[in-house]
Each structure stands twice: as structure tokens, then as C-alpha cells.
Length: 287
Image (cartoon, rainbow, N blue to C red; front, side, top):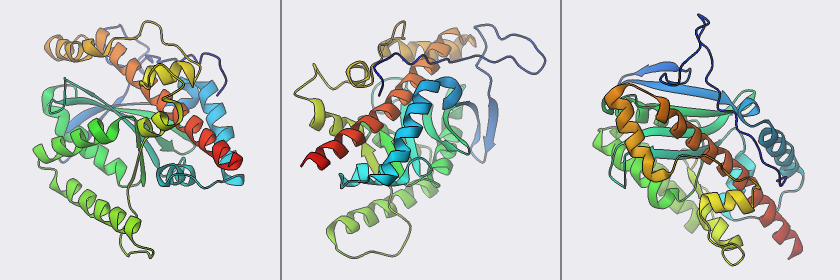
């Protein structure tokens, strides 16, 4: 990717009545209601949020179709399924594993654009409805992309879904996992739904850059691989307190910083996936 900063414009839009939002208001969005309750949804097209990334990723992904190489099974699934079948996921929680998830950040394709979708629980009771929406969106995708998601994000999604008795969502996942394991151990296809491929970019980044970079943390990769450096970002340790303060007071000024942080993580996840596939393709070609 170009070694230039990509400004991410997390804009707070004015409502239809023309009143300008103050920093205490949630960013413009809409309420989602399902059988588990309600939650808030914020959507922004990537072409508006980060135009340079959108243009670069779009042009480079088109070239994948003409110059496909043999890749790791996860990267191959992402290359073949991008953008329609792919979903990038990043969670914001109230602490360590086992704590509540209050924000599910997604980057996915909604015709005609890639879109940042942020599912927000405006209070502790909205977590279940938020997860139900996540499962409904995931049903339409076959490739899940995360960073350290196999160790953290995905186990948290499954555990919190079980806690909320979203059994109808978790049971299909178990079936998909069985099919995926069978596909990897046999030479013939199996009937049933397409397997869910989980592409955890942390493992691929470590394989490519662990001996060349100080570490393989997401923001380190963002700086050295994606060519961007964050300024004024909210520290991860402050995120739970910012959410609890919002629930307690209704003042969203700090929560806006959390949403911005989450959107940056998703943009970096997308950029990193392109960089990994391009690097793997180059290595495959050279060998």
C-alpha cells in the first residue's frame, strides 16, 4: 500500500432536522430491532471514511482475479471471496475474555461499496440483540477475517452467544466447523453448507514479518506495513471505562473516540489483508 497517511474521517453527520450533533450525542445511525431486542447501528461507506484505502484495495483486488497464485487455504478463500463473501470483525469489550461485548465492528460489502458497520449496545441489555444481528449478517458470508480472532474475538462471540441462549446461531457454526475439518482431511467434497473459513491475520503476519519488525502488534503492522501512524487514539485500557461512563451518564463524547478507534482497526485489518495476500503471491511467484 502507498506509504502515505490515510486520513480516516469519522464524521458525525447532522440529523434531518438540521441540528448539529454535539459531542455528547451518538454518531448518526439507526435503531435495529429483532426478536432479541434493540441496538444501534452506525454505517459509513469506506469510500467516504478512507477514500485512499478504498481506491487502493479496490484496484489491487481486481488484479487478484487475473494473477491468482497458490496460497494458504485461508488466504486463498479470502482472495476468491473478496469482497462479497468476506466479513472483517473487531470487537470492543468491557475487559478481558468473558466480559461483555458492547461494540461489534464489521467491514463488509454492501452493494456498491465496502461499508464500516458498527453494532453498538447502548446499554448492557442490548448485547443479545447486537449478537443476533451479527449472526444474521454472518450467515451470508463464508470468510471471517480477524486479528488474533482465533484466540480472542471468535471464542468471545461463541461464549457470549451461548450465554444469551442464541442456540440457533451457535449450532450452525458447529456444523460448519465439522464440515471444514472434514474438507481438510479428505480428498472429496461433502454435501451441506459451505464451510466458514476463519482467516486470522496475526498468524500470517507473524510468518511474514516476525523477524523484520519490532513486534507483530496491529498498530506496529499499521505503521510499518500499511504506512500509517495514529495520533490521538484512545488507549485500549481506557475503552471499558469510556463505555461504562456512557451507560452511566448518556454522554457519548468518549464513546466517539472508541468508535473511531474501532474503525481504524477495521481499516488496518483490510489494508493488512491486501498486503499479506500480495506478499504471499510475490513469494509464491518467486519460488
